[in-house]
Image (tube, rainbow, N blue to C red; front, side):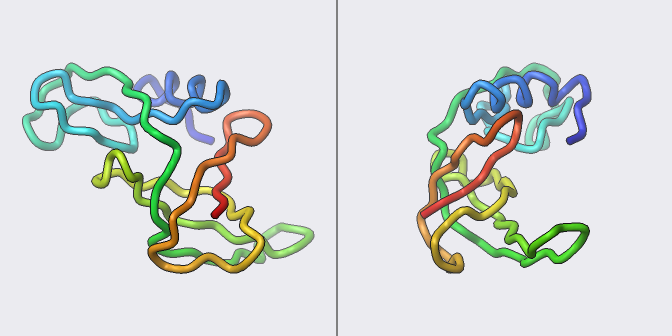
Length: 116
């Protein structure tokens, strides 16, 4: 987990079970990960906007690194903010599929897991 001045509030929201993206105060662009400036209009102003914890699986990888058992990490494009992607641990009963609809589960602490 990497907390900085731009993402600290995001981590706090996720710990409370709220999924959010930054929204530019000038042009309204939704963005994630947190950034100091809007990529579209270069404005510094922004706020956090809650979004539905839902999206589509884009890709995944099975990691065998430093784990007692392999685990799957998925890349998910958010339904309400399609320019934004998040990563999280897969908790589905079967292997994920590209384009599969998923929903975030909020684990203990500031972690996100995804399931079908």
